[in-house]
Length: 281
Image (cartoon, rainbow, N blue to C red; front, side, top):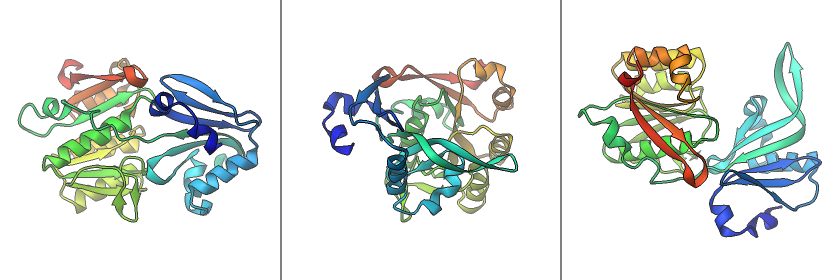
């Protein structure tokens, strides 16, 4: 399968966002918004298990908790979504067997993604908070990573709560992704707890975290803002959600997030729109 992927034309590879593997079917690559089939024959559930084993460094037990949540993070920040037969205990998923599909999200550093954004959010001369919002797969993590890098390299102390290990992609305590020279990373910890830990331990000027959604995480964002620390965060949603979903609109109305970035488009046509929070209240 790897050899077949290496033969795909360079243009398609450069735009690749995901690799999909389906048991009983085959392999495809999502590139520039299109799912392109790659002829590798039929893939078995056992081969999907081999992929997961390889991605975990032959230590599946170390990622078992993540697999129960439907994903695992491989080296260098690539996230693997997992489908199969759920093992359920007391109404909760406690494991996945008979793997049926894998979605390998390809982590990328794009060091032009946040170009111009630090100047917009800091236009008042003070560090301001920002919420990045888009549907799943819109490029929120890539934009957040580049924004963290730019602010950090400009001398701002950034504390990064990297729950899934996708932003900094830590290896033996060292980021494999460039998140800047003034960034402190707490990875693989629940983001709400990590944010409060970083607030107490690292005297940050900014706390960054990916994909806030639960009430617990939103409460953590509110607590951080209440301590006078700026927040950089991402969330799933659309421009309409900012007005209609109370969990987001309340944060904007209360001034937890000063600025909003909405990502639109896909592939090479992807872009972002900057909006002041006050314009949405």
